[in-house]
Length: 503
Figure 1 (cartoon, helix red, strand yellow):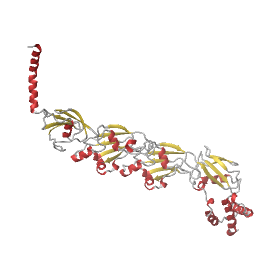
Figure 2 (cartoon, one colour):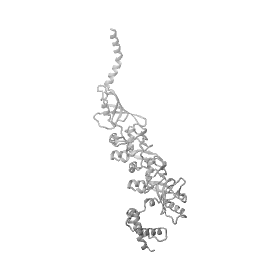
Figure 3 (cartoon, helix red, strand yellow):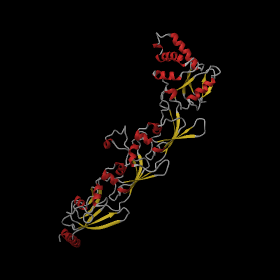
Figure 4 (cartoon, helix red, strand yellow):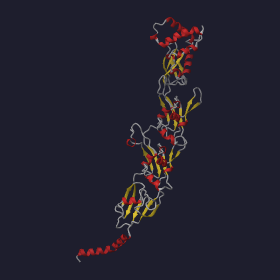
């Protein structure tokens, strides 16, 4: 029988299948029956199959396209817990739905248990067909995956909760293996801020061998270009490793922190702030509040940043070197990361990259500045991460001596005026004494000539620091008056006693 003689009946038969039984009325049933017989003969190999003609016709009939269950799942590895459908062509009594048992087998009619553990759908189809060969002439077996079993995947490295996870794929008969790398990272609490998402590795066992394949995944391409191919579908037994990056990339840190597979936890972070802050030490820092961001934090948690931590620690001191701040970050899979932060770029140029998001266990180190101009000191005092107030002590001959709260970087003259100004009858207004506790523990003492009309400068009107003490002494006349008063005080007491006795 030649190809041309087959094409017409095959066309009739395939068209009848495509239209379905409800649309076959009025068709010459004899021709359909004859076509069916010819197709069956071709399927069992008794005659040659005219593949080009059939393939061309199948493309014109959408209903004849093969389903994803039999083509897209070719690489799926069967295991205990999978639910499959086994179809025997023209033998419906053997067809049906079966569960892969814990032993890795399926119990089929006529032949009993057949092992499918660790096999692809195609391999399992061939094995089942071989089992039925003694009972059927050239059996045609098709296996479809109806429900995938829960898969077990291990994840390690830079995730918040490394370990082993079992999850049921979010899949159907047309979408198998939907548990992807990013989904598994989300289950593990998201990546840490130290993760190198460009070098994610997936180790996968090879069926029938003792070795393992290593798949390299670049999740940065997923974020940057939307390359969905990087979000690899996982299989049972896969292991994921996310290494630590050698250093923090300021350009990428914020984007990684806001990625869908970044941390989703809203628990407070424990960090340490040391160096030139008002209250150095460990702190527990939560995200921003609604008032700070205008965001409903019940649904979106703002990750705390370095400036938030400094504010919680009372702000920087006036001797802080904000150009050389260090962020020290521990990692799960490598040495600690040390990143240099320049907050002067944040102040001068609005470089928000410098304000890095924090993670649990971070340490912020703020060193002491070796030199700072008056202009820089003024700008630094107005920064959001500087304290709102500092306390200085004004003692001696002022109207209201004692502790005074003033803005950071307040000039000495302004602090004196905040204490009510000089006591004009008693104060020595030409010079005052400034006593300062230095960061190294030493105490410095300066005598400063005062000029209330003088602007901010380090010589005659220096900016004050927290806990500075300003002493306003007595004038010469007040000193003489006090001395005379001390000498005459006993005599005045005697005269008072005489007056009391009436002498």
